[in-house]
Length: 149
Image 1: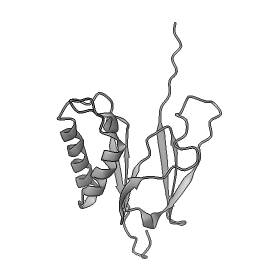
Image 2: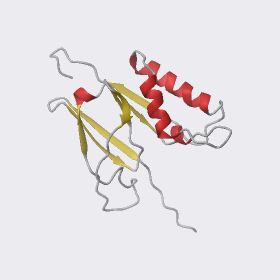
Image 3: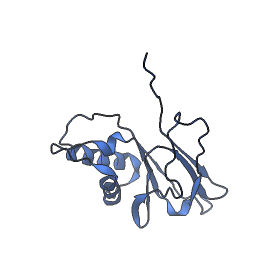
Image 4: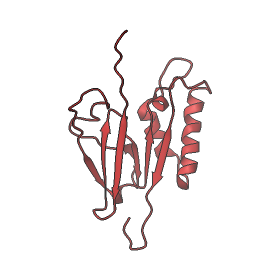
């Protein structure tokens, strides 16, 4: 019987209201996209980047990063199937197009954002079937009554 290496990617994010920061770590997962007042960008991973996937190394360590909540309006997490989808010429959608789509889609609420971003991906792929799993998850940070987030 052939041995098969099994692994999974993961991304953990914790919203810490007391410290007013987002703390996060990645295990081989694509970095989410954060949208703030200045547009959208890839959430900074710093140091060693996105870390090893879960299950590859028994003694793996995962670097924790943080960002102040006042820099975040929306956070979009996704699986790699969304950025690996190809058009008829074999060109992948890639993360830079996803950042551009999130930055350009000015809409109220994350439901509309997810619908529009997925629509842009499907249009790019010319409505071909996705070859890999596709998952989009977005959250929006709203102001608290105290004036903070």
